[in-house]
Image (tube, rainbow, N blue to C red; front, top):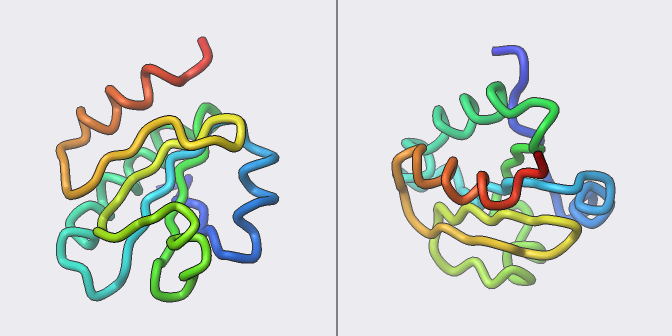
Amino acid sequence: MANEPFHLTDANFEETTKKNPLILVDFWAGWCGPCRALAPTIEEMANDLAGKVLVAKLDVDENPQTAEKFQVYSIPTVVLIKDCFEVDRIVGLCPRKQYDAALQKHITK
């Protein structure tokens, strides 16, 4: 796949959100079965949405500050960030159409 999800960290999170008007962030962990099940969908979305939306992943175990800031208590949690503010959140493993529907509300035409 040409475009892979961007890897967010506590260190690059703020700068990345300032540079990208719309970001889909998958908060995940390697030990989480539903997170691993969601990974192919996130990778597919990163490829399909390249140039429109930054699709990113943030490992909650390696980046606890950002996970805490966003009050992520269950994973997977997918957060949409538009212009540096959270605009939508989906908790748990869902079909792609649910993530697409959330994104459509915020994609600038």
